[in-house]
Length: 379
Ligand code: GLN
Image 1 (cartoon, rainbow, N blue to C red):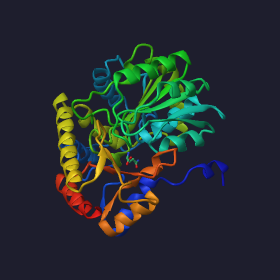
Image 2: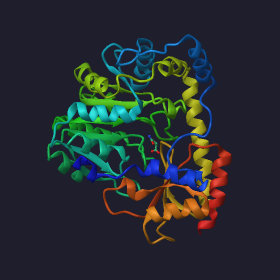
Image 3: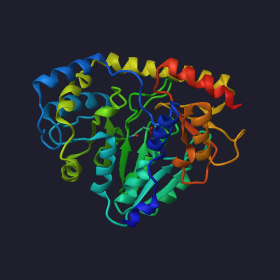
């Protein structure tokens, strides 16, 4: 067995879903909706069953999918994205991130990862033979220290991973923070691998800035995202990379040998999502803003302390006032005895921080209310 696997465990996010299933707990751990995707997508999927395609699409994604995606993303990112050269369609952004990392990293390269981080980044880095350099995001606001970030860049990393809006913290990086990251990336000639899967789940009054849209950044940014969160289709495994052609022509090679391509019938059906009007994204944002309000109200009533999210659909709840041990033990206990599953915060931190658990609120309001009613027994 490869020694690389000694450096990380299985995903605690996915493990907690298995724990939730085992105890029949309300699953607020692995972030995915318990409501249906837009009807347009479901209808198109039914049609595609009859009409196909049922065979491979070309490896970097169907022409129609890339054209529809380029049109939508050009508008939202404020960039002219070429559907023929600038896109690779992948099996979820999970593959997109791994491909991005494998495309730019050599053995021994360094990659800056903010801590807390989404679990996959560390596994991706190590599986590429690269080495993470951690830069802390300091609670409670999860902001970085400019000098700490500069010191990390001074080690000449190949890339920086940016998750914005951020999983697990719900942070939306400010324009000032992004400008500083961009300035350092340009100064030190570093790639930015951006995970922007929550690009359309930004909670008012916060606003999302695509780092690729900042001056001088398109040519060094690999923007990774997916349709999972935007259209509530996490099981379709449709993601993508957007980057300039000198990157994508190499990323396409990696992607081809990893997976050949994303599921052809699902690419066809997903066009119904990519072609939805702008009003859909406004409704999505309102939907999640309401869910956030319902969930935070429930947390308040349960007397729990948390860091208010600015985007994405996660909340870090502070358990330190009533729990003094391992957060992994706490989460197992909570799933079994309280009936709600969450992810132990330590899974996201490089530092030894045990005081948070991460809940997600991509659930029907009734599910969120049921969960917070149970959580009231914690205090
Ligand atoms: N992004 C989701 C989470 O953090 C789940 C992603 C996954 O399991 N692939 O919970």
